[in-house]
Amino acid sequence: MDDSTYDRADDSTDDRADDSLDAHRAADVVDVFVYVVVLNLFIEYLPAVLSETFTLSLLTAVLLKVILEVVVAMKKRVRARYRRASGPAGKVVAAALLWVVLFGSKFVVLEAVALVFGDRATLGGFASVTLLVITLLVSRAFVRRLLRTTAPGDGRL
Image 1: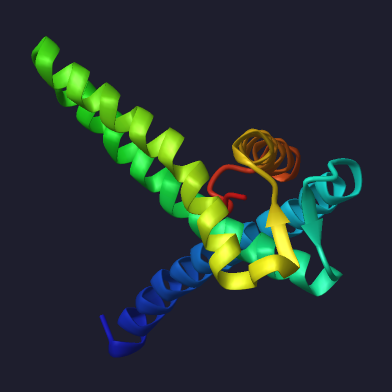
Image 2: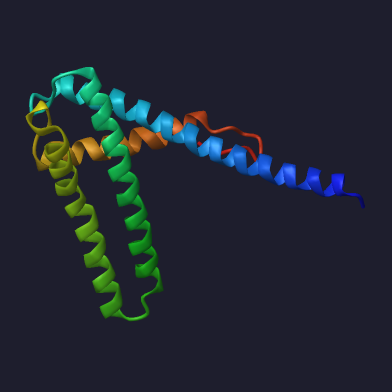
């Protein structure tokens, strides 16, 4: 084999990595678009959810995307810990951790928005933020499923 064969093999691996990265970036952009739409519907229909400008709602959606990605990753780790737990005490501890992550994340969202945007954007209280987060995650899953390609081996959204 000559060197050009190895170069082509390396290029195909790089192309697959680039495609995967592009698919993840595309999914992130779609998520932010979905979050902007959902957030602005909440702003329009729930008096407790406010944003002074569209730009602030867009930035809030980006902040929500970052926070919710961290929360989902933490939730997956805690669920894996729950599955690995062998005894009842381990299961109880993992279940308590899951509750803390899911319950506490709403306060993290509220505080992060207050810290970053002050009075110019607010998500209301615990109930409105809980409803918002659930709606964001369900909407994101729905849009991803809607846009998912059917060809095997394609990038995921």
